[in-house]
Length: 278
Image (cartoon, rainbow, N blue to C red; front, side):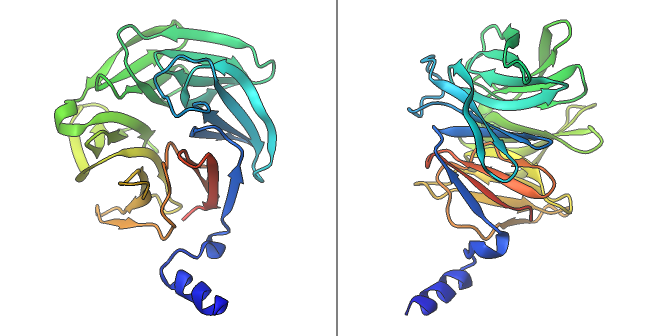
């Protein structure tokens, strides 16, 4: 009987053994993952899933690429940290209305830039060694930030009624397009970096979150779905959408591809799912 059930589960496309899947537990509303070399950083919003509350219970965890937790509270005393990226030895973290930077060697905060009138800063993506792009889900603005002189400007303001609030950000290889996953009745978009022309990749309204590339360059997009039934979509070069064969995920947030593995925060389950990169 057990063998029949196992075969039936695999037949449904949710047999994780083929993907060398690994679940890692012990987090507190993990929202974002960043991998640099042999280090994996996980942004934890906190024990309560309160992404906009300044309760000082957010933290960053550090793992190795095998999924072992090196230091659960690698960086502490944040509010609700979300998107991350790294420039040299500085780990930049979005924290509600402020962009913060931490030296990964000393763990000291070395950068702080409050964004005036921001509501829900969510993700960041590095354009070059001086420039970050940062989404504000609440206002629809994608900010362009110069981290050297601490200046920022509006790159584009999306119509949130039409496109939803911008969440996940990802540049293409040549930095000619910025992919945007929008939430709150959102769509998945690509924005031309020169003309600011907007192309819709997924028009179906949803709660889209993280972005990454598959091994062949297809775009991977996480969607929270409904009633805890989150999925990962795949968009090929022709714009065709398919769904990865995974069990439903409760809160698939800002995932990361390190070239070999896809790291997916299961925000509603306080876990991380690591699978072979499709």
